[in-house]
Image (cartoon, rainbow over all chains, first blue to last red; front, side, top):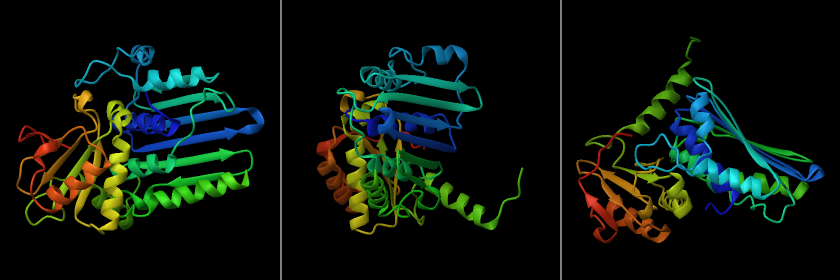
Length: 174
Length: 129
């Protein structure tokens, strides 16, 4: 069980890194006007063919050698379906993968967004060679972050606070 | 292929050196790898990572490489991290929380002595990034 959406984002973005992505774009769309929340994680990694894609939601399917279950995508699918939405995966071998999960924003079972700043910090510090892009859109504004110059540690010092401040500003204006 | 600028080359060098193994006379005295698979994340690996980053910031550490990787196959013992110091075999730590991670950073990474209470085993690790 992943307790909030920021943990799901971390998990799916870690998948992208494992798939040898050089760029991972994370988009959060929070639209009160449409009662909709969208999470999108897009990468330019190795992608999946049709057969693999068809089994990606099966918790007892994984390509890993270390264990025999793969729970990340099934957990996200379950979380989105429980909140009146669903999950869609587009993927093409050699081109990358896009995971898109939708939720009804006001659904009582919609998990909270959680600490997206901690998720981004963990990604940027953990994978300095990957270019992370984060876009958070609301009805009234947007916050954009690119890892570019803060890749790894110590360059990423103070990153979490910077992102947290940016997201707070966005929240105050919406 | 488009031409590389000096700036891009510098960035590539910067990123590549982070994937190296710590060695005598190198820029890093230690490498900490937090296992960030679904199992690790569900068990609290992000909080471990956050604690290590905060501690590294607080101490202004410049020569410790912090990185993350996937599941190591011991999902029931997550959160886990692997610590490598110069010239020593890697040590895998299990069942971590932020306080244990800070203790390991202080005693093992900076102090040089393995925290045996939290270690899974010593010397059974491969070091590929």
